[in-house]
Length: 90
Length: 385
Image (tube, rainbow over all chains, first blue to last red; front, side):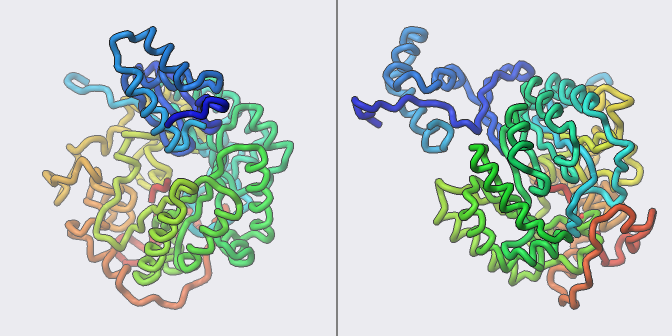
């Protein structure tokens, strides 16, 4: 989605969710009231940037610097949108 | 144990903090023989259990009972879970929750609340719960949780006396602003089995309720998560009980007994281990009780070699025991089970006038009594949630 320039979406994790690194399984997890979602690849890093202070282009920019060879500009906004539709990002 | 590999770590722990409860629901998932308060683990012991659980891989805990609010040290237990990195959900009847208590729990790190409701009609609710004014307490508790901004789920155990009220129960959830409604058909072990004649619904009731849930689910999509936990006796399919024995989660009873599911205390020769005697890692990985029905090698009868054995794990061990006297048999709920007639006859048989409930109370069932023998066609319960 294209954010309104005056009021851009700054994704933040819904308060009922917990993002954590699981040291036993070496995976990033989203823990919800009734379920656990295992985040694959760098998804945990992306969600970790959703602290309500960064816009979507801001998140994409930071990730592009850290992962210059990854298609972050196309993949990340879609991923964030999906999480928003699930109600996991506000 | 040469050649054996460690089981995958558990994800979740059901903490039955006490068996004491202000409610007396006739389908309670606690065992018939309720743990005495004097035998309960201390807050410090619970904190240690939760630390060990986190090290083992547990990331989620249901703090349940009985009524967990009856533990004055619940806040410390929540804080211990939070410090260990475990997500906490309080499973409560709502009785005893006030603003100060909820604030203390939230400060300690409580993440979400699941509230039980017995019926959408206050009088029917209180009759099933066996306690006056329990509906009013639930209504107040729901409003408090909403105001505190915590996610709230309703949990309704369904049976003959409330299946026709499913639509109204969903309306209630909408009114109370919940995020999730779990409509869980009664599982017939323990108290549920004892009260089976009073609780067993008709096929028509179930069909109507199922249609209602499908209609409302479409209508509420994106707003409220509607979960329907299938009934046991009616579909000819065994449920994948607990996601497999010792596969996903463990239950710690008030006195520290550790079980693969809350109903497993009913299995007579299981000899479940206790956290007072063994480390939790040994209990999960090595104890005979947790390895008893792990994997598929123990399977007998039609389960042996069945293509569904990795999907339903042979169904429920407690149900197999309750209905046949042998916990290693195929769950009679499965149409392939040689014992399937036991549930078919019940599902399709006539419905006698419902006897009064045997309310869940300490001492309601004489020790060693209460049940007719296996195969007599009368009464027994399952693993919920």
